[in-house]
Length: 295
Image (cartoon, rainbow, N blue to C red; front, side, top):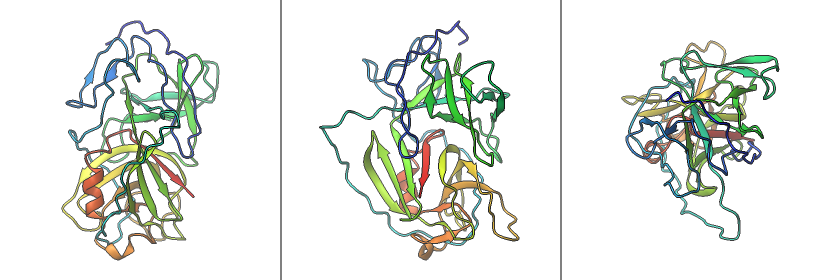
């Protein structure tokens, strides 16, 4: 899996406030491809094809992991509002988001896509509380394909940095979660089309859910209670925890034992959804899935 890699071919970039950058051309030889369609294992591929003859990976629910939510309020879900897929044949097909597995020891991140640029931090190789190997969302790729821009996990103030892509295991996903904080709504999109939408509780006024671009770092099952039966740990943290807060600061999407709070500003920063919504999301949101919180 350690061949001498050739650089990635030029890819297009896009604004990450509401859309993720993804590859429009194949990733170059020597970058290993993650088979997220099958067993969820990482497979050594000559080329990761995107929109070519090789079938695209489709995320499934084969490998549950464990996160640490920052919200421990009581709640229990309300029914999600599902919306059928909408297709606009007049618009170009949205590109896919690129994900990379962070190797042991993490990745050095620089201010610019250059080995001479100052180091701004390090992309952690394990999740904050459960030690799950991190799969990170690459929000942008340099023109020469050699560097990728990643938001540093669990860092505040939020910042991103450029990491070398040579030799990293890579995957793509067609899925993206967009959370509208003011509308208290979580929307799941596939290739830009809405496939699922549900109400969500967001942070209360004193501890609002931080805006930004995150990705799933953990998957954990619970026996019910404050977090419901499942949670997706995210790469972000809550810098404005309630006074006297003793639980973790990691953001998450999780269930609740207080269904009446869903659709309101009620949490310590996490996103609460119903059990029905968790059942829809659980097979789809794998490690690295982009999650964007907008105003």
